[in-house]
Image 1 (cartoon, one colour):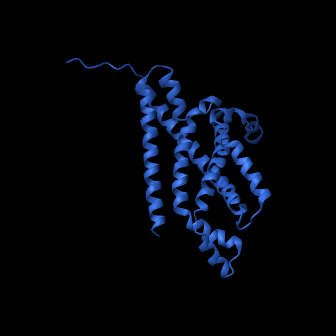
Image 2 (cartoon, rainbow, N blue to C red):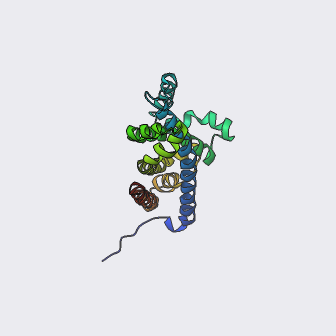
Image 3 (spheres, one colour):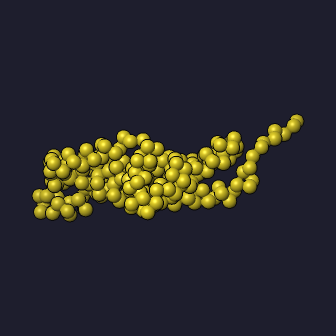
Length: 225
């Protein structure tokens, strides 16, 4: 039986594989940290300004909804090009990992804000009214009632966002960014090396599986507390 010969450069590319893996984790972690915080604040603002909310304000709620609804539907490959001039102003460059992190953070902020809002509206209004009846301030209700009550679903929501951000890093090469997606395109797809492409794919799948499992476990513990 003759062994099937496979023409691949994967043996020479392992240092680049680990570098791309590190870049993906670095980009995703920084984006999730910054976008997660900004998205939480924006989503909280959407929630508290809605009708019947703790800081109900129709004008503010309309403005926030228009802002989120304007940016959310834009495909990321177009979004990253559209915000490139702004990236030059804010992070000093329109290319490379700083530019992709800036674009990802903006996109993640708008996406996360809607996830946060949707999870917060599931909090039982009766619990909030009970806190109000004992004289708790609005800020305290947000801090000690609303956010803790929605923590489990929020953990699952952020886990979902992690996967989405990993997907979006695949287009990092558009602005000269790194990561596994760009590595797979540059050294796998464009050089017809299926082994390299699938190596990057399997690493991405493994990362997603680990984070999804961790998110599920954490959410389960929070919900059972």
